[in-house]
Image (cartoon, rainbow, N blue to C red; front, side, top):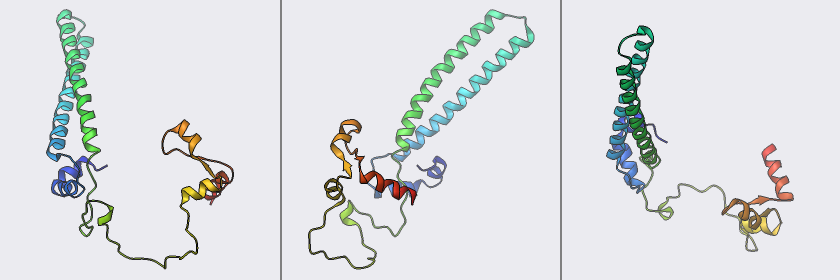
Length: 177
């Protein structure tokens, strides 16, 4: 995730990344929400300082209009709670917007709609030619009894898998390597 400081310093670069990657995000809204959040956070801090001063004045003086102080403390607490709730809502909205901000790409990276627009830069080595139809990793794992997809999906949901037998040993060997 990009830092908000970086986004504020390089808005044109971030806007370009948003356009290039086809993301639905209004950067002005993000910056506006952040600015509003910062102002509200400062207001809450000032209210807390007032409440603390009021509390310290009450402790130090020990006399005076106690009823007025209690009323002021109640009003400050109510105002702080209301602003803190608004601050939490703003934080949630801000976090959701920040998750949409893409990382800028290098200038020489071509822009495309999908994977088919990718450009191959180079190939390393020759492609092997087999005298049989090669199997993918899914078929190999199932045929060799290394993995159980069906039972794992019952427990962990879609895309879950459970290693078994030699699959577990292979995983442990790779981890130890």
